[in-house]
Amino acid sequence: MSDIEVGEVFTLSDENNEEQEVEVLGAMDVEGAEYIAVAFVEDIQTETEEDIDIFFLKVEEDNEFSYIENDEEFEKVSAAFEKILDEQEQEE
Image 1 (tube, rainbow, N blue to C red):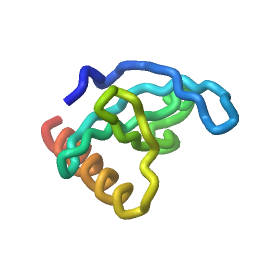
Image 2 (cartoon, rainbow, N blue to C red):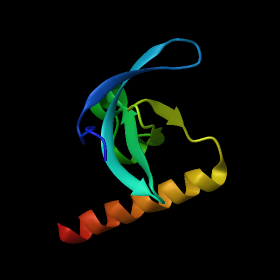
Image 3 (spheres, rainbow, N blue to C red):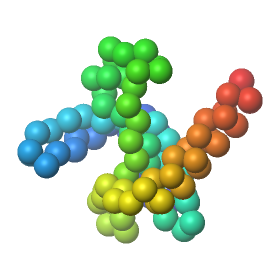
């Protein structure tokens, strides 16, 4: 796994070159690839937990990020993240 840690905040640029700060909510390996779950910092500060949009990024070898481009890959990563959240809730 890379050096990216839960709670880390960084800036992403969208397709319009608008910058948004995101916070890492989780990191996971799925079928040998590393992914992170992130949410916009502004949403985390102002929204309830149910209203926060979470999205996933693939971590490339050089610690660059890429968007998940197909539904099958997204479903696998989403299911893995849900499983991690369920396990954490059961521990509490």
